[in-house]
Image (tube, rainbow, N blue to C red; front, side):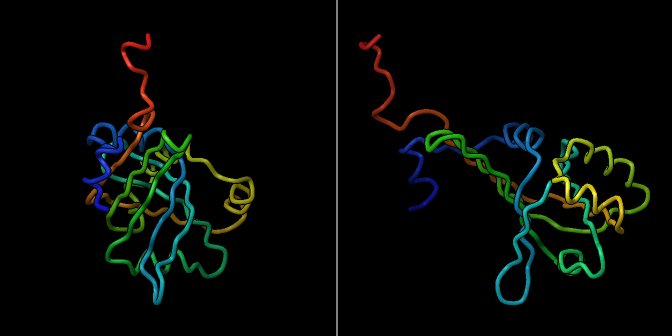
Length: 160
């Protein structure tokens, strides 16, 4: 079944404004990086610049496979989603390029990451270990949502 065919069941595409608003309200998603064999999928907290860029803080520790894959990737994907109920959910899929944050952009990256959610273990590790800032330059974005009851369950005017 195609995405267009799901329209009749109440799923709709999000506008660019809705996608921007949704990304600004979220703090975690799943980063997909190309790897030999299967893609590498990592849950990540992120900061959003409000326009076309996400930021990530990597705790490097010794070697970092995630940093290596990010540096080598020509293209990556990032999925942000929420599912409150089976009838109320949103999903945004981004495609773009990963790169280390250049020195002149570090302050903006750290500001965007101020509200990023991080588990305590990563907070403690980032205070003790080397870190690196990465950015995800959004090239394409697709957002889908379903908000409300499915067809046939809506309240009818004569039921008021």
